Image 1 (tube, rainbow, N blue to C red):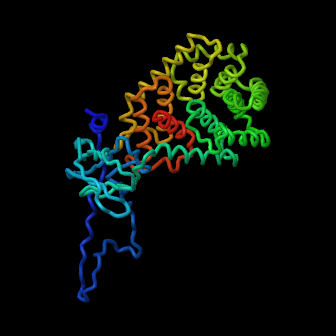
Image 2: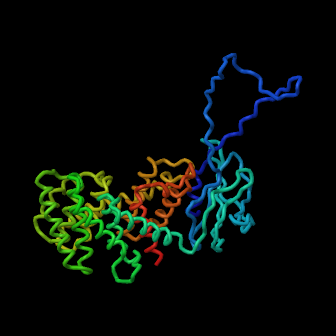
Image 3: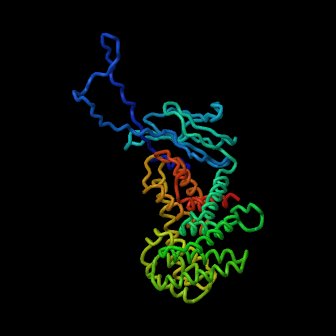
Length: 417
């Protein structure tokens, strides 16, 4: 049974029977009217229009030519066939048969999937099915994820230059660059990715305008990470960043207790400096990490533990085992629950922001393991967030946390090269 078939074991849908029109009565003058239902001079209207949802669900941003491509079709009854039409001409370009049509008892509805993976011709299309109509238009292209990644890089570079990027967003962006730097654009071929130059401008603005006190620990972590990644490009600039990171962090430690931001900063400072004082402070967190894995709910702890695992300096093996075991366990947990989390009709999650967070956690586990199944699941997460969900909403278009999407897209692009 395919992964799609497993997913559809629990598929369902929602739909309402069309409301009946009120009976029209005609008076002696042949004028149609609706019989009065109230003696009030002003009618009391207390009626909510039912939400009408598409019954043919697709990824609004499209599919890669060589990828698995399918739509979800739901309804109280389903026809056996579907077709794809060219969005410009309306001509049918593909005919297919619905597969794995299953009944969902809880909602008294059927659902099936329309697989059009064999359609390789680039273009803009929509899926059409008898009874339930059409999907949103979508694109089939040579490299959808590569295009989205390049466009998002340009958008985030502009956010850096305009100072619109927050410190936490800049950290996630830099994390994506650390792991998948080779896929970032270099428009002028000067061997320095455009994103890193944009981040230099962002640093200049932060230095000129100041950083909020609550963000100083994370800003120190950013400067240390940037220094570590940039030293081969411009050693002097990287050194200046590290000096500034040390100054900011020393100031923060006087006034702040241990927390997730401090921990991430410690791991970045230790990797960049190899100073024993930072190594000792990291070990003070060991008991906290050993007794629970809930710390992974905070991205700063998750990313900080990933930095510690890849540090080339002396590390505590027991602490590394704790981090590795917890990250792997979280990956398996999300993997085991992903069908419920991204169920296209009855998903059990806490919204798009939480779902993006789960996808990023899986991405961290995938970075360690390079698991083919995890890569496919990350792609499924994106399909859901980009339209193949119960409301058929493209959360990607309106989501402000685009840096998280950049991390996922960078991973998919890198795995295809």
